[in-house]
Image 1: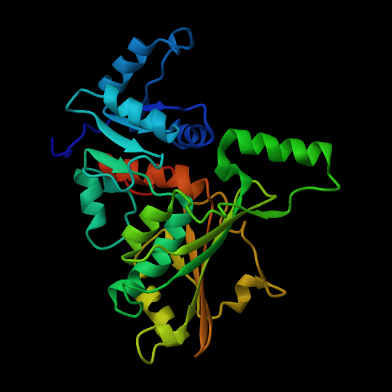
Image 2: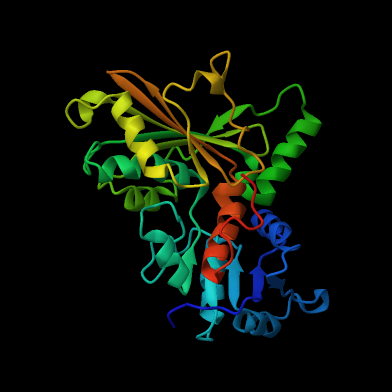
Length: 325
């Protein structure tokens, strides 16, 4: 199928709607007049044949499942008319799937609009890719560059189990909460393949993610030495490139170079985009060193909000319907 032209009222089945991402997608869609949410009755929720039927009767299926479960769900989809939007990591670099980041380049919206299979981006890669892809396309950052990425996310990014662990820790040991903890120290985070592919770089970046003791919010940071950039490039060059690329993108806000007004006594708030589908981009630095920063809600533009944005594009609805900026 070519994926074009759904009926104005789209029937949407969220497989895994009880999870963190699924619940937030449902919340954003529940009041919509152009979407009908179809849900398995509670009495049949564990019946595999009922689930199979729902997977094949919807116009769009949104998978909010662990990776292996998402792959299993795809094996159950046999109808040619069903379009799938996968919020897991399972298909982000898979053949036959379109990467659901509309702002990636000038062609991505069209690809999403026509696609039968769309993979929702990861929260960390969303920031990394939107910061670096324009610079790679412009030749300011070379494709064989050695890049690093440091990031901190709210604990909701780890799903229900991690949320429960952090909330229990705060309740049981309020005097000793887990403030910021790095992880993925084997340097093999599951988001690395999409970070490399969609940024356009040929080398896998060094990625050091951390979890902070706050529920939602995220900062993704990419440090650059100007002597590794295109000759003569400075912080001003980098900022001008990002500003030009995203000037007409409603969900991407490029702050002024240096953005002192965004700082609180020198600190950048990771929670300031929460509750929105906006991603804020910052460029700090000078002629020698540059710091790129992306700020987003890891459950908004980093997950559920991005899924709704993609669904809107797929179904021909207004792209920002159900979303806040």
